[in-house]
Image (cartoon, rainbow, N blue to C red; front, side, top):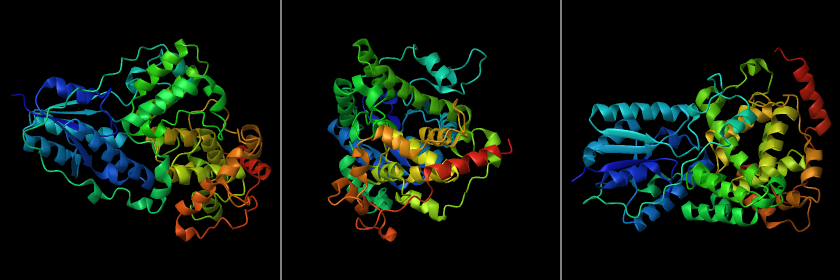
Length: 471
């Protein structure tokens, strides 16, 4: 009989379009899915770690429905994965690639240990449309600006999505598994978990339903409605893509079909998928984007780096007195996500009006977003701050008041998320006070604050700093 194949599950919580799982079934012999809790899992922020726990529980149920199981182990992958392969007599270990530098280093080490032990070790594509090293300029360099990157990949062929395996051969006896509940991955969410949970669309089937509904009724207007935060005009697939409950290739093919059907917003949707690709492209080629200024000359810029400042606290609490900023921050605490237009506004306000380092915002989003993605989060913050890969001049400063007039003219978004100014607040605005830490001592009866820094004042302060920069 063919020896077992260990499939190391990471951010790929699905059965369809799962190259490693498909290859394991094709190899023959038992297929044993395993998820490892290592330092990279333990270092996740509160919201993404909680969302991962939900995803793992659901994926385990999906595997069980196929007569399989998800084995849970914890420890250093360099020791645990080879030891588990030896315990099972596995002849192969397969997994789908990750691209952040810490994961790449870990996976390279694991592959070397397995090969030395005589175990086949293979990694597969699947988290991206295009492997980062396969996209290059005519000069053989990587892309540093999005639009040329988009033009270089928009007509590339994307392989057809793989069907889910019809069956997953089980071993005669399953290895021992740790219990997901014992890991308590959601502990840091505290009472916020109950507030955010109704907004989660969990698992592969839900992700496919989301994609189908978007393509059927929303993609045609996507290029117009995606910027209006009060309208449910986006795919909302970011949380599912982050954990691989759906593959980018599945989204790409659906978008291509919509284009062929003449749906106007489909190309814009494809561009957004490629924006995600661009973030990974930059992370692969310039991993410093995760923790340091992508434009290295910005190292000397005098941002505030003190998170204890009152202005930073007000920004985190959604109490800046700037309605667009506060509404977006509160949306994040209640839903675990934030509308993309809101992300640009809150990031611009923190880094430009408040002159705070983008790393403060990056870390806060890393803790609060259920759709947290390392590459997209880093690129988004640096793009907004001016230190990242943006062809637009760094001195662009969004005015959050005029932006609100443009994208939330009737204040439908603001009234959904801010309670203090309304006699009968929206239930979602009230849910914010149930989600936040009790230590903030905030209530819907509080008076709404005056702006801590007004739009004009903040803009002038930012422009003055840019004029006096040392680069």
